[in-house]
Image 1 (cartoon, rainbow, N blue to C red):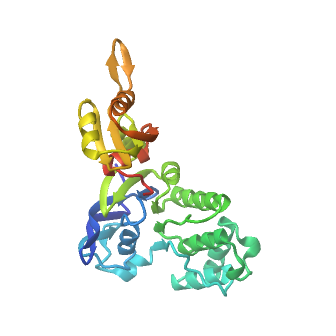
Image 2 (image 1 turned 180 degrees about the vertical axis):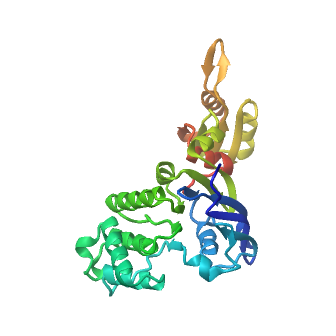
Image 3 (image 1 turned 90 degrees about the horizontal axis):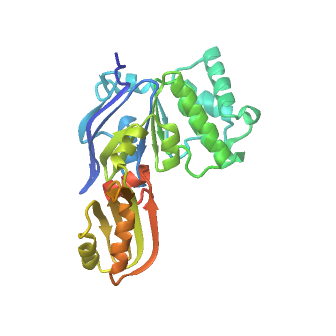
Length: 321
């Protein structure tokens, strides 16, 4: 019997004037699961997390934690949620220990329980030796690690993480990711937003691909790679006439033009075709066709099935564009 979701998001939507920042998305996160929302900057990730944290009221839809509607009893539900914002929420004039005691106290921890929680979190994020130093003396990576500790000090059932590794060194990133894995292994549901492909691939149990406020696809890494198919994504840079290139590519079976302008073409290809008993690459056929035309080609890249390839196929652009 499958576990009921710790987080259930139903048709969530939020607009700012004419801009639809989040457009009717739905997904679930189970206890002990790390669910990644993967998308470029501006995709709607932070707006989504702000609604899940109760900081923004959705225009449509609802958020449920363990079956309880966040809007019905926000104070009670928020007590079991940890939030790690993209911008570090630390008091730089205080020490790490003082920050933890302050935030732990806000969540209702007192006495020995508060002291034990602070000691444990300092050890987990590798700040024990610097616990009493003012945070203003910390490096960016240390501040990020403390930021994570503040969201976890009360041992929440759910943790919402908004790009927690942006702009930090590799060692601090590895520490943060290890802590997140450990927290999830103990049963906490983790919602993790990122625009780093390698993080999503290496960390998350399931991934939702978000762009322009829409959830375009979701599943395990294997399921998403299956959606890409066996074909490749070909990107050609140069000088083109979009109409002419569309005509040339239209001659081929098993290819689809995703995006075209005067400087770049993005084309999805199907699995290799059989020819005289051999598998002939669709990408090779495609390049032969492009070269037949009167086009200036500066560079060509061919990408195997991957999350970035899926994003290209779904949107016609790179994840980090």
